Image (cartoon, rainbow, N blue to C red; front, side, top):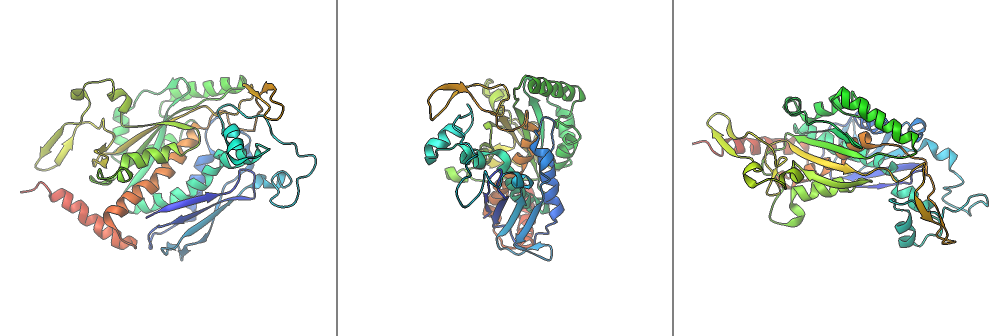
Length: 397
């Protein structure tokens, strides 16, 4: 099974990741990882940090002659900004006298709870590890799982349906046509827009909203649409809570910094309707087999994949570091004071879609490995082909 860990601080020397469980025999091109890292740095509304960093992953282990060898894969992404933080983030020695402690927490951030939890007298360590800069390492790690899934014909993509109050109408027909080609085409089309939206009208409105928020010293959140295509029916299980595919996917999405809600299919809309208008009716045709004409369930029924595209929706709150400060207090003097500003983005929703694609990949990969087993890609492919064939033959006389 695939698991990964990340390490590193936002302004430390580097971010790193160790990924264990990628089967042997998977062809890895570092350019594929670095392309995803570049995608994560794009998007209208990003801050000055993106002008400093040029993220590139260096693979240190687990690959030989361009293929995985079944052992842990380690990656490192160097922080170019580290050269400006060597004193503030020194790993050894004593702090220099002119480094002032951060004692004013930002509302909505990990600052206050982290300081209390870990017993710091300075909020800086909390800021460094809780920062969404960590997602660069997760994108690198998750891309390895995406590459494995792509070898099985499974693709992951995303687009942005709203930024702040600007919402894009659901492009049902266009989306269906794109998903029929695979979820990655959704991403490639969305990436043509600086806000990763399909409609040029909505794109212009979103850019204007971001500009207005920046002018006012404010920030904006939004909604991310994630799709996974090529997953056959029956992946995941209902027999135990920790094997439920929907629960694992929701957990992965909610682990992304600033993501506060997740929805599968049209879940919240469905909650306001009667069952007769919610559940996807089943049809059987001799040639096509089992067919659903709708996908309101978002590709998951009974905590297992239904064979339709999996659709997840994630809600990202506005970033909590505001130029125009909210009310806070100084944890040392206990006096009320405006919250402090930490260099940040006005809007990072487009980038969060790229992160979401990465974090769901190991979840799908693990559900498949649980079903199929195998230590080498060829072995897994053979079992996957046979499983798909068995599905096709299930209802044949």
